[in-house]
Each structure stands twice: as C-alpha cells, then as structure tokens.
Image 1 (spheres, rainbow, N blue to C red):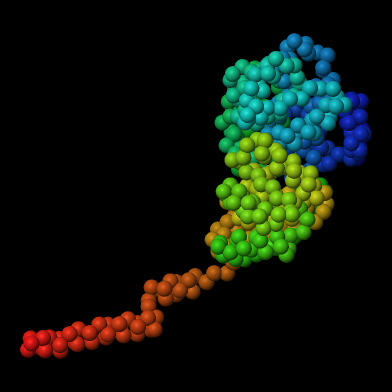
Image 2 (cartoon, rainbow, N blue to C red):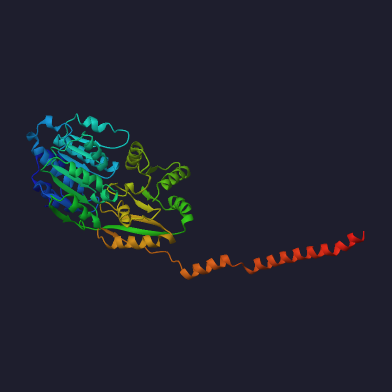
Length: 435
C-alpha cells in the first residue's frame, strides 16, 4: 500500500493524516493496521522509530470511533476501551502526545496515569468518562486492585515496547493485570523492537486464549540505518578527563552520553555544567522525580545540548536531529548497546557513536558483537577489544613484588650503617669502665 487512503479510515482519522501530511505508511504500518482493523491479536517486531505508535493508534482510534454510539457514557466512568502499557514515564508522555493529536480530530477522550506525586489521579478517573488510558503496568495494577479503574469495556490491551517491559521486570504485573480483566472479548497487541528468548514463552503463558498474527520486520524503513563507530581505548581512571577533552574538541551539535550508574550521571552532569557554563546540560536517571525527569527531557528535546542518561532513555524515545551518542560505559546488557546507538542516525541521516573502551570491557564486547551480528536493522560496526598481553601482565605483577637492584643496595647500605654504630658503642664501653 502506497497511500493511507487505502485503509479506508473514517473521515476524522483521515483528517488527522492530512493535517499531519502523512502520505505513505511505513512497512510496519502496512502490516499492522489491517490486522488490527480486522480485530485480530497481533505481535509485531520492528525497529524503534519506524512508526509503531501510529501502527496501532490509527486503527484503534478508528474502531473506537466507529462504535462510539454503542457505548453508554454512564458505563464509561473509570472504564477505558483501550489501555496502552509502556515501560517508562517518558514513553507515557510521548505516546500521550501522539494520541492527543489524533484525539483532536477524532474527539475521543485520552487519559494517562503516572506514579509520583499525582497518585490521587486514579481516584479522580473513577469519576470520569474516557476512552483510552496510557500508563505503566505497576500503576495500572494498583488502580485496578483499588477498583479505581475498571476493565468491563476493554477492547484493546496494547503492550508497547514489550521487550523492555519484560527487561524491566513488569512480567508479573502484566500477568496479574490479565487475570483481572473482566471483559471477555478483548484483543491484545504486542509491539517490540527485539525478540528476546523469553518473550514468546511469556506471551504463550500470559495470553493463552489469544492467537497472534505475527509480523517480523527486519528492515522496517526499507534501508539500513548507517552508524559510524569510533572506539576510544583508555583506562578506567582516564574516562573523566577524556570526556572533558571530547566535549571540548570533538562534540558537535546535540548528543547523548550513556552511563551504567545513576551516581555517575549526577556527578558528571555537575562537572560538565561547571566546566561548560554556556552549554545546555541535562541529566536523566531513575532516582529523579517525575517532574525533574519531564523538565529535563522536554528541555533537551526543545533546546538541544547534552543529555546524560542511564538506560532509562535508551529505548523507545524518538529524538530528532541527534548528532551523536557517546557510551561513557559500555552497557552490561548487550541489547542496550543497539538501543543506545539507535538514538542517532534517524530519518535516513548518518549517525555517529563514540565508545570509551577499557580493558575490563573485554567480556562485554563479545556479547555486544553477538547482538550486532544477530540483527540487521542497524548497519553498525563490531567492536574490537583493547590489546592486553596476558603474559606481560604477569611479568609486571612479578616485578612489583620483587625489589629492584637499587632498592636492594639501599637496604644493604642501611644494614651496614646500623652495624657500624653498634661496633662503635662497643669500643667506647671500656673507656667508661676505666673512669
């Protein structure tokens, strides 16, 4: 299909597409939209940034709008007809933004649920009539258990970034949610960027009554995203100084710097702000409040600069015009290397990735290269481990233990001096006795 008009959407949905100048659907949209319009369960795997959100949003909006007159508003208080589950607050906001833009034309009511300070939001939703709810699994489960959100009218349960939902430990929450769904006739849509080994086992156990139509798109853009890689070999203690040098001499335009530890994000964020007071520096990690994370992320998207982050923003977030990515630490989970690198090189543009590589990363590099070889969405170079001679290391260790000749001579000289002093005392003793 070369045109969205081929899907025969309602005029309200087509109006959104026209205003947004959407003309040709992406491959994942070509596969997913008809499947959802036919009310079939779907499992779609496609690279992040290929239009997965619209792939499920457009047909779900179309279905809900088409059957809008069949639902009594009195029954809709606290009872959404579609629930979209995503792993992070940033993705809640990102999906909400897309849904709001469609709702402006379709005149459907969208709500979101987040944790943090606004925990009373679910109690208020119980008294509101709305159509679609966007939230994280843990937040939804607690709202259902407190009877603040109902599932009697549920038509679609969507798991966006399904693989990350499992990576972040939401599998138990999702399983509990499924057991509490009261609607007997609802469909499930799973959208993912990768195919982890435990993904299909989880879906088989959790959604036993659902038969999925599967779409695996290895190259959802029709071209490969090309990413140029530069490896910087150094010692662990040299990283901080090298980061400053990189920002002074190499960094051009906006970029993201990834760390494995939240403490490093905060520490080096303050260091960079002090060193480059005129540059825009933002930080993002799991220990920040909802308001802080939103403010920093929105600021980076709007104004650019440097975003220092843990892997919380490595997935699912689409940032336009990102010039480069720097892996200050190589990730412990190899798949996150692909997700980090995938932040750059969007919209057919060339991406650039820099890696700080230390001798201790040798095992990580092997797993990362296996992950690179196991995918074909990113045209990305494998990493080379730094050369460390094993025998040489042993010799160095021995030299540290064995004293050098100079040290031995000095020690011998000290012993001789001590010996002379003792003999001198013995010579003086008889003189004192004579007195």
